[in-house]
Length: 153
Image (cartoon, rainbow, N blue to C red; front, side, top):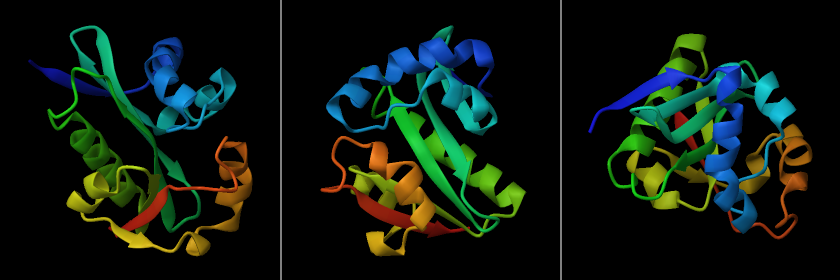
């Protein structure tokens, strides 16, 4: 099975929201509105098997030194095939190209990110604007079980 990795287009937004909906409903991934995705469309990399969207992630820029892996999702039935790992790899490569020094992730999948070279950091070290822009929208806020990890580029 061949997986193609491409930058997202505006016409992909509906498929992206459909793919991530179960994880949004369970509280694993934050919901992003169509407008929010559109505003940040250039940050998303998508994985397709034929014409079927099977995964995506975004590289969000917080500061000129710090980025974040966001909204990483791989469709059930396609997990375990290194699609998530490849998506993160594309995001990290993009971060290096842009000149980022570090990339963080807030996740329930700590071991996945540790396998990719991320190390756990205290949540208190996250940028304050991250908390007030994103975390406050989470249904688990302020009681958060996610782990914060970071990787030096």
